[in-house]
Image (cartoon, rainbow, N blue to C red):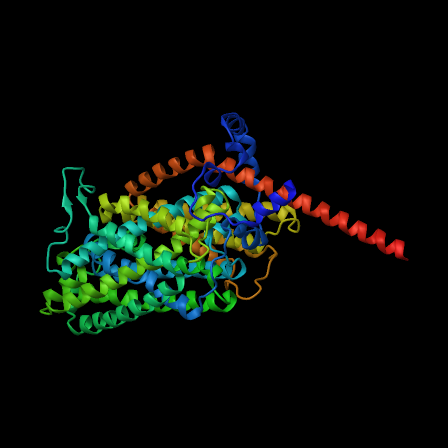
Length: 596
């Protein structure tokens, strides 16, 4: 009777809308204070275990997905992914950051900042594409790093992904308010609530919170319907972009390009590090691999196709802005709208503001989808409570994960200004993309149980040389911007490190599509991302450092023990399954021998 009752309990599905300790902390370490104290006493041992352990492709694509209880719906094609690429990228960066960085750091040379960032972004796109084809799961870079670099590296990346998701949504929603006020012909801060709080946090923005909530509600309702809405909004935004380019160059004044480098070369790279945020949306496509019907075909078309076109569009739009209006007169908050007003096309600013609003709306829509999928897979690994991994059985969307990102982003958007947010955002994005390039090199040149230990040590040594020389180049640029002798040391060292890896035998060949010119392109991606990180101000690193310390505190008190318990629970289940299969096989062979 008890066995029948147990089967009945297992068959009966649990309600999605549940909230208990078991849903948030189901691991053995959190059963009671005694088990938690024991877990803390084992921190050093567990950290070593998690530092050295690796996941695998099958675990990420099959086993972890069971934590969601329901599968995400496979409903997307390359066409959807291409438009998601446009929707996730065009809007936030080009309409928001171009004016800010052109005015503050680069001047007319802002176009070169977009070229530098675009090249670096395309290198990262190559890495993402290869991984997304071979490990088509919602976790994106988090899942890829768990497989190649282990749990701890994946956690650091996961924490930065969550930070990037929350801060990115907050930054775009704040910008949405600025362009909305421009459309109403009001001052950018006229609809914000003025307070006596510290500068940078004293303009409260309830509209930004409302826009975030609406975008997230649509994303929670249906992935397919969100895709349809993204098509329409992105198509409308494309017409606005064509208008900006045609009208902008038609009213161009080449005298505005002088001086071209008002802040010197340093300003170009400072701006490049900030506008890199504009390219960050492409990783959203990788998180939708689990919902893509044919990942091996659709992802390369969607990722590489959309990003190639977007890079060209960004550079042309960045050039048109300082040609219409002198860089020193550009409005930092609504640059294109006021630029058209300055050339006598006052009516055009409303069209541009409307296009920018549509662009930023699609960024929020696609962001709500992608960020929730990142969060879902992070929760599947129990780095955050597994309650956030649940997928709703009717909508087939991760509602809990979406709510987490939306609520956190809404709180930040309500208080923080755009310039406070973007510097922190860029450093997180650059760090993640740098780690992805390292992971790709590890994937190509190391295979557990196959690669000789001597080759592994050589690979680690060469990677350290590449990273150290890239950091040296970045540091020399920041300390001695007018000098060049230091580069004659750091650049050849980077070259020798990359050459050393190229002489090692590759252990893995991509099944469908692979990054070309390995290890040179991934190594160059490491160098450019670290260089751009070094171009950011010290305040960005201070904020990044504070956030990292907070992340590590969480990891050592909660995340480490939850992931350790899950991993060892899975190992016990795997061992039990193998033993059961062995017993069944043995019984079968005995029966065959008896019949004989």
